[in-house]
Length: 109
Image 1 (spheres, rainbow, N blue to C red):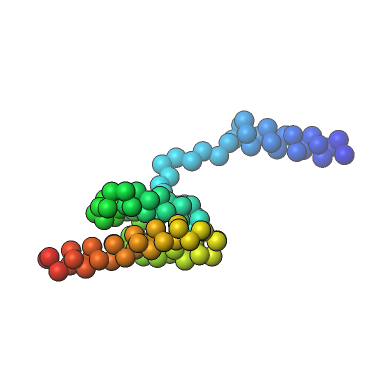
Image 2 (cartoon, one colour):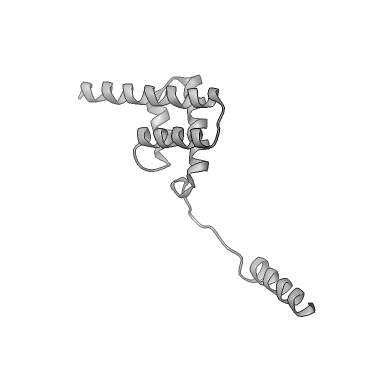
């Protein structure tokens, strides 16, 4: 029993003091889908106030990939994880706004 306790204590000391994990230059695109969903929700809340789809796209760009697809994936994740209806509605509004903005930007070219 004493050997087990010494082993646990030694392992914790080594992991925390001698060789701790260091995260360097990580980016938001490495987040799990749960955290990306929270980030999309925050962007949707900001969009609700600012009503600027270009700024929302800029915010979502840090997650990597297509912003519209990221919002769709976040909505699906939010539905699976039981987000409240008002949060889902905000993300759906953002998705619709981004799709309309994308279509409008495509027609302007």
